Image (cartoon, rainbow, N blue to C red; front, side):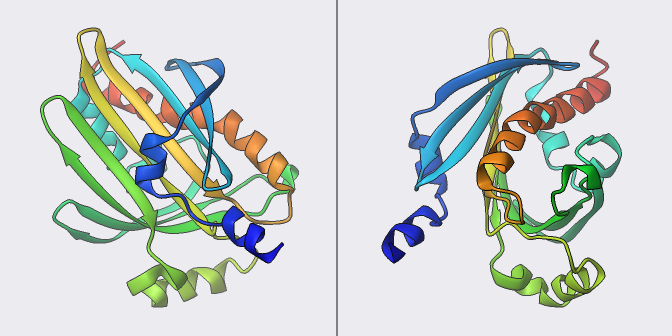
Length: 216
């Protein structure tokens, strides 16, 4: 039983996410267009994916996905705080705090993540992972966050990313996330919520990219 639990809580790797077999769940309409939602079992846990094709330049979409500070204004996810903690080359370390409405009965969330990104003419990627326990090198800021928000929960598993690929018909947008939200709600309820909010996350980036590109 202990072995099973440890396997179930093992964090997936980016290589496992890339090689996973994804099962289609649904396609949901958003104000930024339709987004297909997929699910895969990876390292003993459900992971989710959303994808679509849009007529927005790859470079613009990639820039928006890296806009940690600006996400406070264009994301509709409920971000209350979003800070870049360090930047070095293609790596960005950052912190975000998600204010979840009280009626949902779910705890607020926060995370300390490290992302790596790269871009060529036809493909761009953004991949993130947790920085480790207590915010990694930013433990002092982590302690401040915990003190200011004692009831908030940090997901123990949080890994995912964006891939933008140029195609003849536009740019293929692919978003993938594996997370263990934690908190008091059953994992089944939390996973159901992730399926619902994932298209909105994709739509946020597309909507802002269209605005910057002057696209309809």
